Amino acid sequence: MAESTSTEYIELKRSVDLLELGMFVTRLDRPWEETDFVYQGFQINTLDELHALKEQCEYVYVRAAKQQWHIEQEPEAPAQEKITYINKIPIDQELNNIRSAYKDACAQTSAILDGIRLSGELDTQRVSQVVDECVDSILRNDSAMVWLTQIRNKDNYTAEHSLRVCIYAIALGKELGFRELELQNIGTCGLLHDVGKVRIPKEILLKQDNLTEEELKIMQEHPVYGKKLLISKAGVYPGAVDVAYCHHERLDGSGYPRGITGERIPYYAKIIGIIDAYDSMISDKPYSRGITTLDACRHIYQCKDTLFDKTILGHFIHFIGIYAPGSLVEMNTGEVGIIIETNNEDGIKPKILLVLGSDKRAKNERIIDLYKGDITFTNTAYVIKKSLSNGAYGINIEKYLDQIISNYNR
Image 1 (cartoon, helix red, strand yellow):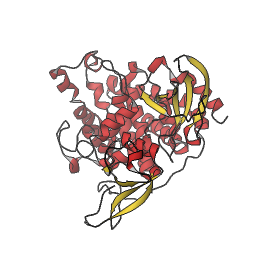
Image 2: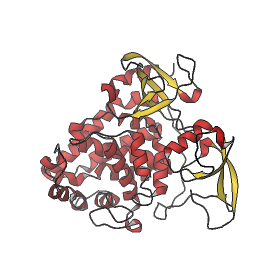
Image 3: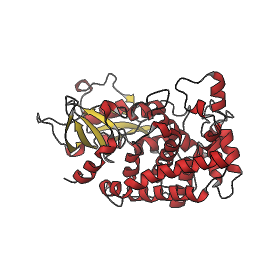
Image 4: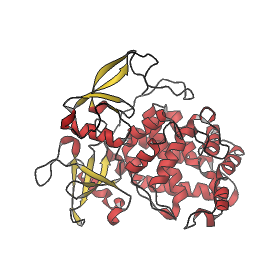
């Protein structure tokens, strides 16, 4: 959100469920002294502040330009009417539909990259099949595929990362109101964004330690290799060439390979750049452990308008949720659970499958819904205490898939 150029301001009453990062809070629905906030009047700059407002208030007053707040329009975005989608089926049904299809998509993505690596040929028909499968699933229910992206195999990082970026890109495109053809196009961009890495030596890709300066220079050539590979292939969506070349460029010119700035970076490359950075942060790699989804959102949001486009970034954080589907959390009781599905009405109150007790040992699984106010064994409200990184306490989320599907509506 951005204020108009008018210097006249008014106060607007807003439900805390409608607050967004960047808004300036002028008053609360209760005295400031009854809250944890240090300042009387502040801009919402962090997810922690947004979380705290939702915890402590029902509504607040925000400062707005008299001509009203407006959504900033990305000038490079596709000129089209925004489409509003609804999920067609519940997440448990879609998880059951695509559990084997997701594994097949991982295998197909590996085969696509192996084909380029070994023969230089790109199987565009196979690319279309993978992307179409992802688009169809996300249009039925966008949480299911996103949930499955949390099942990770670090030994096949490049292929699975490419598929995850494809899935996130389609889901974000749905959030942005893209038409189905545009969802297919952005999905193709995501799937092929790192194709240039097939030209990077495996000893660099799989190195267990930090790269040397010379090795880093070699790694940073993969966008150039990606452009050369794709531009020579018939039948490739042209935008995928731009994305492969520009997804590491940043608004302030600090990116690579050319160091171009905001207006020169293609719109789809801005989208994929955010998603690529996010997934890289939360993923285990040969040389580092991934961070939590919440911490990743914090990191990329701190880079709004310097590295990343804040309008796209706002939509991404809204779609992925403060607690992403498939991520792990610890509750105020000490129990540990898996996020099943976020709630569009309140991002801090998702559905959760509890899998470990307060002693961090396996327990009889059950699903709780924070939005419905499910309570603990001590008759107090469940609250998420903190996010956990993928694989915390040895949890393999794939093994709980059957329980989620069978117990979801109990």
